[in-house]
Image 1 (spheres, rainbow, N blue to C red):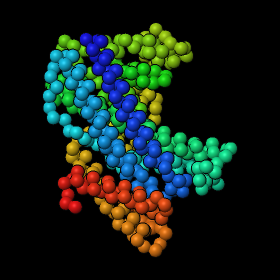
Image 2: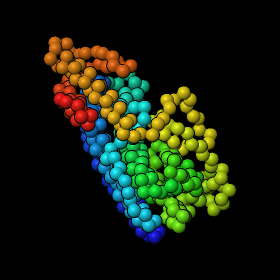
Image 3: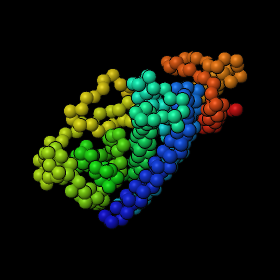
Image 4: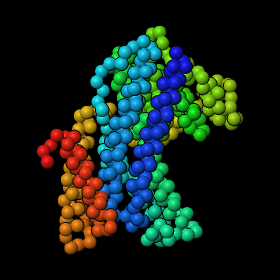
Length: 362
């Protein structure tokens, strides 16, 4: 059984990595097509983010399908049949929506760029020396944000679909499976400690940024995840050793020095943190995403796209070179550029998609 479970986990890993790479490549090709000025033009960045959002929705659907397929394989290993209709798509985060998450790549670029206000390149091919290095840092920040979102959201989406399948099939307990092979530095100590715990049907497995852990079912007779985690003992010893200042340690007491806490992230839910890590106070309450939440977020994107559509029209059909307005607590500055019309098309495409999702008349 352990070999079969390992094969299922490895197949899921390969598929998840492929989907993440494909999505990141498509999304980054969009962001990388922007001119330096475009990164400061809300008309263009919101349009690019609208395009990326539709790619992200397709990506989440694919990750959920992977999670369900993996769940069915693991259920067969514990002599249980996969049951229940699992939604094709649910949003991943609470208290935001996919479009707002997608635009964070542009926000990351701007956050770095404002640190060097004297550098504002007109074209990518006119950079040299320290200026080129500085600007590349801005782009790296944008891509890093994109990759973080992709890995985190993709794995959360797959695991939630897996857990939904388990629950529908009568599984009441499960455990996390650590994946040292998916990280250059091995499994983080947070996940190593958490892998010793099991979770009940009413719990969600706590994650962290870029977490790659998966979920295995537990029955009264079968616990395939325990065998898989036992196979990673050296990884556990290495994590323990880091707390003791050594390359690895077989001393279990070293591992106990690494304490973890579980707190609720307002967007992602239960997350793992080091015991001494600061916890932000006053964050919005988190709720597990479901179809009602998905509907609400799609309505918000529909309303935003409708509002933006009117301002794109005002800009491109009017005589002014820019349109400034406030929406949902944020000020936007739409400006005419070579890419503004295409950005408008992307927003209208998302408007059409959300309208169809909501079943609204055109």
